[in-house]
Image (spheres, rainbow, N blue to C red):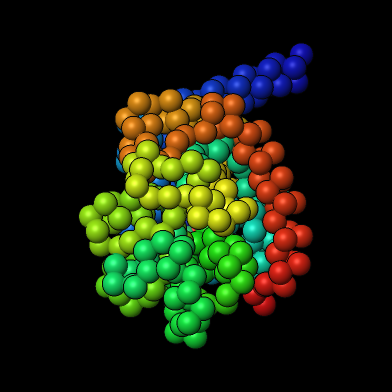
Length: 324
Ligand code: ASP
């Protein structure tokens, strides 16, 4: 009898602790890790999301930049963080290319992280320094052919979206350019504006304002249709570059072992973000949109991540690109 009573008390205590954990989460400021430098597209997306999370949770939500190695350093930081839901990761398509690109990747994106949900898809644009003597593919191609040893193409490191887009571009036009890696396309953009590098392929979150203000030139968009924010900029497909339908998907993750109650709260916050009119209109300013609600879920992100790892692995191995 005594044993039974003790068991019931213990079970009741556990049940209370479980619901208290859900109700009490978060108990302190939260941190969103961005695996790229400040001022770039992943950083911009994280800051928009953090504002919304702050309102949802009524807690401070900080954004921390942990750049390097194409984003893998920041991902690893979250893999190793306390699994209590207070440290989460915003990372894009690069998390699915890293397993094939990095021979010594210290984590497995599927096994070592808890998916919270997909966030948004962001198109890209190929952009050039404003002084480059070419403004469309028609003049860019002969310029690249004549200057292939001199032209530089910036990116945010091996496996970053800018790196993938640059690879796709070089293989489509059949010209190898000198690539210049940065810790994020925030600093890459500063150098493009300053004229220190010639070309960059980056998310519209980082390029639309600079194109509109004339600080850089747009060569073309990777979207299948012209961007409503930049109607005068043709798509790359329109200019004869096929296979360029490239949008950068983003996911939100927590360390493996984060309690289900906290993951559920994080997912509820994400669902409210992707529905939010303010978030949607900010993204629309960049020609981007949040994902459908059923993709902003753990299953929606896990399924996509697995599919993307399977898609990129053979492409990368065939191209023979990797980091030791
Ligand atoms: N998203 C950029 C890229 O993958 C990096 C960044 O956010 O700075 O190139």
